[in-house]
Length: 385
Ligand SMILES: NC(=O)c1ccc[n+]([C@@H]2O[C@H](COP(=O)([O-])OP(=O)(O)OC[C@H]3O[C@@H](n4cnc5c(N)ncnc54)[C@H](O)[C@@H]3O)[C@@H](O)[C@H]2O)c1
Ligand SMILES: O=P(O)(O)OC[C@@H](O)[C@@H](O)[C@H](O)[C@H](O)CO
Image 1: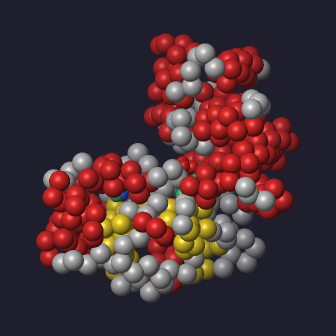
Image 2 (image 1 turned 30 degrees about the vertical axis):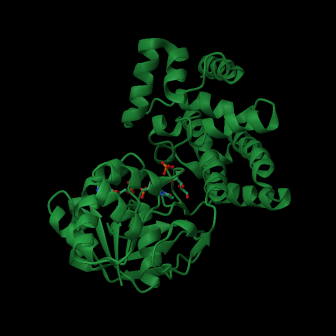
């Protein structure tokens, strides 16, 4: 069985490639990082190490790679032969691979009627759905009908903390022991991929909201407040009682609306939150606040981990969240110069002021009380910096 996976980065090698190997797949990674592509083709294997006492090592074999910037034709050929296509490249990159995916699927449909599933494993609501939309923008009406029959784009939620790697062995990936991969069964075509480790569900929305608005919401607060208080790493930030309290407070707020909206058992959700706080504090993982806080424009988007739970909390619970809005305010103070989006937010604030910047990035109306609280919190944090 052949899997084509876009993105041989942290989660691609550290999680998806790992599960694919143990499920019997040969994996072809598609990436634009020439060094990683070269090394994967030279070694055809890499190590995954568990970040825990004992540091258990796993060797992932049967892998190779294609540089899509240099050899797009090889990617098109690989998609024609694949039994599964997955991605872990980042939400902002999905539109950029749509043309190549469309070409690959078109070429495949010309040769056979074999169905194929394309699963985006990104931290966003509706990642595969977005990729499908972008692929369909490249198609004729007749091709769309043909693709509807042949190709499935089930959404998914993936959870495993994989920090940026600083190992001498450039292919090796250190990962946390925990993992979860949930895939929407109803949008699959053909046979269900037999991958132990995937949980298939009928409706993905509760699962992706639970993951994004707990793991990633808490992570974002730890990153933005960690940065604010001068911490370099997430586990160190979690040692600061002020940050811990803010993160735990935000998770209890998002948990309140999630439990009410989806009927989650409150006790189980409280355990889920405690487990996540424990994962953030893992001393065997060195995870920079700047990785976790990366792309703040994306993270401040109306459907992402800060604004969506804040808005939904106020709608479902009927009150304003405190900690979630502090998280939004802290993101507006994130001025890391190595992050293009952070630089853009700061120059926008300078250019049009914080009020207009909040409206621009969060789409929260300046009429709303949420908006006023974000401004107040932003000013307080700025004054006390
Ligand atoms: N790292 C984690 O803890 C984690 C966990 C769950 C989900 N995710 C999600 O997985 C996705 C990837 O995150 P990551 O941490 O692995 O990032 P990463 O930067 O380590 O990996 C992304 C990879 O995509 C490659 N890439 C960039 N443009 C490309 C293109 N046009 N075609 C092919 N490859 C391209 C990059 O070279 C890189 O190797 C993101 O959506 C992230 O939110 C990450
Ligand atoms: O990947 P991002 O930028 O959406 O979010 C950063 C981290 O919160 C994220 O990568 C987590 O480590 C991951 O989602 C854990 O499953």
